[in-house]
Amino acid sequence: MSLKWTDVLDIAIELAEARPDVDPRAVNFVDLRDWVMALDDFDDAPEHCGEKILEAIQQNWIEECED
Image (cartoon, rainbow, N blue to C red; front, side, top):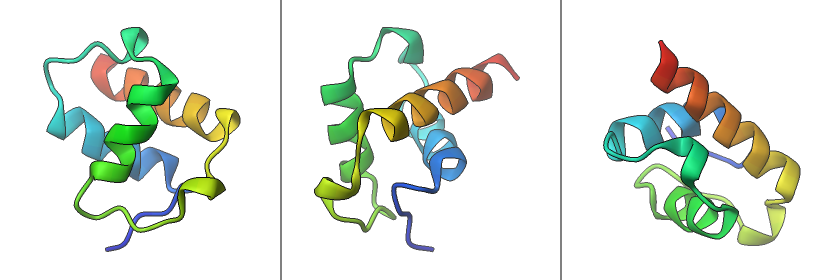
């Protein structure tokens, strides 16, 4: 499965699994963007990412950690 920036929930799940020791509330957007692009299944252009997408990924990641 290939992840795109719009797959915010799937990206959040992948990040939660890849970085279980990280508090998503404390992640800055520069690191978050880099970590998303480093995911094995991620395949999208960096210029397709914006602040709203990063906010959505971060919010979903927070919710994943609370479950």
